[in-house]
Image (cartoon, rainbow, N blue to C red; front, side):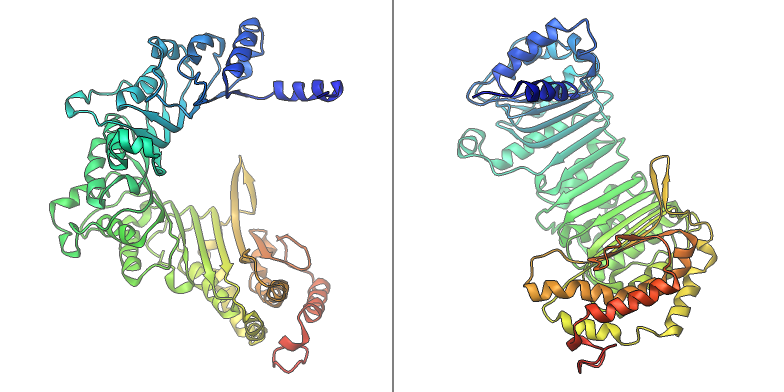
Length: 522
């Protein structure tokens, strides 16, 4: 095969500018080792910031790469990614960890899809990187558990962040050699428990047999300040509604956590955790609360969340709430008078103008913070097959001036006087950002065609509702799919443009979906 010389040299210059060094084979290792040796006294070596070592199971090379590429050749390297290592079949070189220690600038380490015999082999890597501050593990298997006597303290005093994500099903060979997935998960838990310097921990709940087991495990991290949980766990029958005053409350963490996040967690563990965090009489120092749940919360879960928000009070600075539902599942925020960032994202919302307006009203009426710098409100509409009926109902009361006037009074409250204009301040997004969009699922063509018609139907009313904030420049509004192709809206429309939009609405909406359903234009 012949390659154009012009293309080759242009591509080589582009690749040479990359800040990531990729090793996927023994050949890659040999080529890069030779080149780095030849260029060690030039600026070529100093541009690399990340290194990705993806071991080849047929011709493994990761067990010797730090020997062939000394860390002194890559002094500005900050991040290391390891993948595909299997030290259950290949032994690392005797000087592996010694040579790895010369990569003294690395602070971030990611290890994915790797297998080790015990946690000692994993610690050989982490302990060799003396300046390591962040460790991310995904799909790691450990064949054998270590006896408790071998749990010496890890030598990573600067390691402050650990992320442990979900474990895929093990292969049949690992199931035989490692005595199953449960052994691997327990061994990995024990290995990570040695890093007592960690103050930010993110784990998948599937690594734990119960919520109570998780809470007891967290005692290994006395400096823990930030906790992120995801995934699912078996129901914990040991914790019940009457256990609020039991010894388990020492694990509620409300007095030492400043950041807590639940994302893609099933309702049962979410309910248990919120119940413990909102223990009566407890004090909360949470500054950051993130709850991204993929279900419609029950009344009981909302009750415990309301208690927790009340406990947080003025200490809460950031709140993220993403769930399925409408205005009835929005918790009250009246006690959180120091909020700076607020994100409300509602999925599977019925496509009704009244429902959308109630969400606007519920969220904005409850805000009591005068420090709000960023507000995101995302409404993702569920598009049912009878969307035509929704469009018909949308027109009813669309010109109700009294409801628009009442809503303007909400926007004019003094708590919103200091809202910043939409934009960026030193890279930080500011202002109010509201999105109303139809879901992106593939639907029959006749239903898909009605999505723009529905947005056209609600657009004049939404613009009328938020005209005060659009005039002030504090709002960025997205309506999707917008048949007029406007994209984001940051200014109120002029009278001429509003009249044109009204005309376009009547043209875009099919005759049979008029306000009265008799084919008359609205």
